Amino acid sequence: MSIEFPFRLKSTLDEFVVADDLHVRRMDEASQKRLLQIGDAEYNDQGFLKSFVPLPGCLLRDIATPHLDVNDQFCSSNYVLIVPNRERAIDFNLALKLYDTSCSSLYLGYGMDGSTHFITPPCYFGTEVLSVDENSIPELVSLTERVTKRRTDPKLGIMSEMYLYAMSREPRKESRFIEIAVILEMLLLPQSSSELTYRFALRFAKLLSMRFGRERTQAFTLLAAYSADKEIFSEENLEALCLGG
Image 1 (cartoon, rainbow, N blue to C red):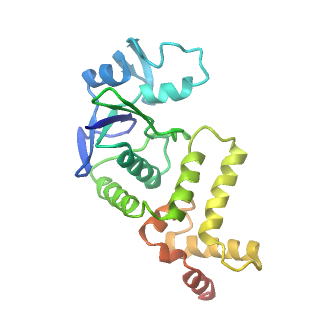
Image 2: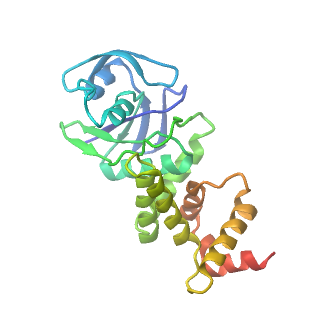
Image 3: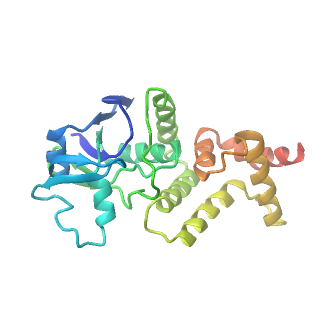
């Protein structure tokens, strides 16, 4: 049984393969009617629905709802991920969020047997849709492979859950900052309890400057690095990085 998860991308590709069991295809009019329950869709410059005909079951039939923004994001989907199960969709969604900051995210998936699958809350925080081209695919494939291999890592699991929540529209900006700060602490704080504030600041600055470049300061950069090689964040390596000048 396959499940289809609609989502938004900025791309000229008709389809691409992320893994043997993860396929992404551009939505056509038939899939819009079947999955989004909309017809005659037209879009504005930001990729949101400008006009459409709501069909029975469309999430935008009732605009007097606190979920209007979420429903608008979902119903403006222009691509669909085809997966064998929800777990693989979760792998892809995390890779999507680790690739770059964007409001692109999975939310609702529909099985061929009529079942509905949720990935909540959807990570719709932000204003920019993720751009994907032929050059982007290898990195997206690599991220998905790494996320899948590290699925049983309890530390990555906790940090990923916190990050995905922070990238949703659920938390206030103050709460979002706290979630991201806790993730950075989990990655960078030493096992000992002395001089935590100083060590955190020093390790953060050194790691960003020497390994990633000063311009890349987003939390997703460090999470992606951890998914590739957690030894980067070992106590020994972080201390050596700071002592190296």
